[in-house]
Image 1 (tube, rainbow, N blue to C red):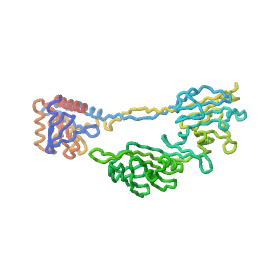
Image 2 (image 1 turned 30 degrees about the vertical axis):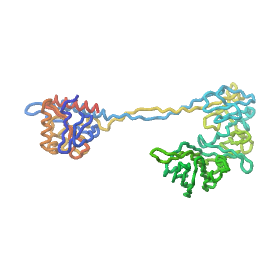
Image 3 (image 1 turned 180 degrees about the horizontal axis):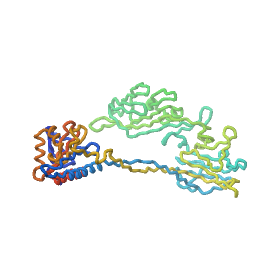
Image 4 (image 1 turned 135 degrees about the vertical axis):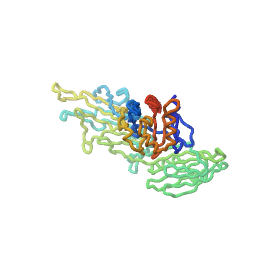
Length: 507
């Protein structure tokens, strides 16, 4: 516990302050924030009077102790910041050597462990699995070019019907069909669905640009009166019974419409949604009321669900993905889609891979097939021994580095002699070390705060323990403080400084 003197707060006619963390708190009419003392905003005023009436005042000892206080403030101003450096490491996973015996090889975990996707060993992958198929009958060595040549359909990447290799994001809906000319075509929709959607009378739901506001709910009749606002601003008031469906949509030309299952009892709403998707509607929302009930506080509430579709992309048979890689939509016969290596000698030239090169697969994962070339004694390529499939896994790691930031102001820069500071600055905290006999700056304090305040501080210094730490608001800027650290002798002044340092340490 610190002495009683450090707990004294001097109002000086400008309101009592409470100093949290620096000697506790004092009950006051007006609680002020604690002083923030640091190396940058604080000056320490040193005494310079060496003796009075032949008695030495040991101001050099006061200066040494004041320097300890400056070092404490400097140390408190040292900050540690963290820099985060992102390091990406590529780890290659290599298969065993694959001999070229004109065989068909599927990429599986048995061939290459730790694959980043579900690998299928058939031409008919299901769900989100992928079949990567190598036909070595279409891969051969070209003696003239000293290269491996990949022919037509040498590599195929096969997906299930519901999992497009070029879908915009996970969860997209894929619609496969034939166009008017019998060509395979594919529409991709962003898809969202929600159940247990609750609302009260007056509430408005907004779903994919459509607004549904409930004007009235009837629990007895189990139906809702709702105003529907379409994306073009058109509004319509409709009755939606429980268990019935409203389909809101924009056709392929952007024209909005409302379809009510109550007006089309012979049609299945799911069939209507599929019809709209196959016609490449821009947006489709299927909205159904599941229940109307009395909610909390007697309010009538409605529980509903919806499905939402937004058109994103269209793909066709023969669409080039990149380079020689072509998209093939095989639906409905094979119920799958394929990205394959196309070589026809005209638009799609043969694909050659020489020493030091590889054939990268058009997957979102970094997977490549690398020839292992056979060489003579002189190191010249004379053939191909086999192949390896490599999955290059990227491992991203954040490395945290700490750096130390030192205060701009050095400890010695905080120290100033009493005769060098002739006024109280309005942009600094001032720590006055020593009493009124040794430190001339007390004269400036007396001018600023008046005889009564300064006399009270003197009495605090001279009472039972012979030391005090007093805080006064800077008379020219209440955001800063004057701190007086004084004792009857340099020993008591030292003790007062040590008490202040201890409290700064705790803060």
